[in-house]
Length: 322
Ligand code: ACO
Image (tube, rainbow, N blue to C red):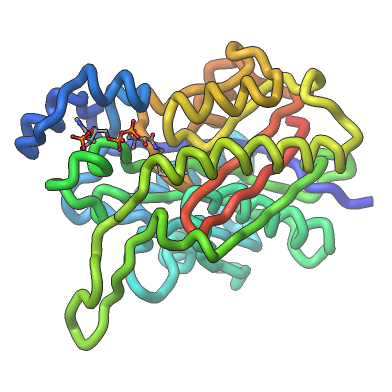
């Protein structure tokens, strides 16, 4: 049986960290470091400079992931970039990334749009492609420049997000790897988190900024994150106490704590980066994974649960052995 396994991780954060106080001063926000830190756990985030696009961040993360996997770029026959902030309307950030990496083998490249669940969705899709035998070596990427879709006069949203990218190399293997995956959507909740605009006739039509009902998102996120974790654990015949690490999407430290508590996972097994990265949407899970892998905290043989929830609403999880 062919399995898929993560053989390398990489990530990239643009520029220096921007603290809450620096952000408040830069945009003249009626807010405070205490309010932001208490309600969200966020203390800093990274923001991409002008002209830096999702594929640029993705490129750096992918170079590091390929190096960790010991793979030349031309071995990659599938690139999936999870992003809601691609460089252009088209071509995809994945196609641009393929060119920047110098991949000339004609492999597949496409973007996947599931907002903050994007990385888990992309990993699920890549796992299925690899297990079908159609592809052998995938780059699965989450890359976002959410700073481009933030309304800097809306203190309820602009303090929450950051820019960055994370990537994994996922390869065909005779040893399991990805043990179980799940992905879900319920489009009836589209209104509680969205960027309800588009480019049309040379102009932005509708609203080009991120809008959110924070409390509705909070309640929805906590419920589905617990449900989907149980779903993939049951599919692999496992229980939460067998997990070495839980890496949820990094939206808010209170969502992370509630999720760990509902699953009876001790807080020290739950990876937290939101304090330093903010919410980087599709990039948050691979950024967190790479950070703990590189620090040596998480490594070969560990059982890890990745799970995300985001606009759509979408949610999903991937249970894996490193
Ligand atoms: N600084 C100071 N005050 C603020 C700020 C701010 N940055 N933002 C909002 N407030 C004010 C509001 O205006 C409101 O003032 P009012 O009472 O005078 O009207 C007050 O604080 C309370 O606002 P609420 O929205 O009720 O605050 P809440 O406790 O719900 O916290 C938050 C807001 C942090 C957004 C919370 O709802 C939350 O964490 N929700 C989850 C949303 C999330 O994480 N989204 C990420 C994207 S979704 C995803 O990734 C899954």
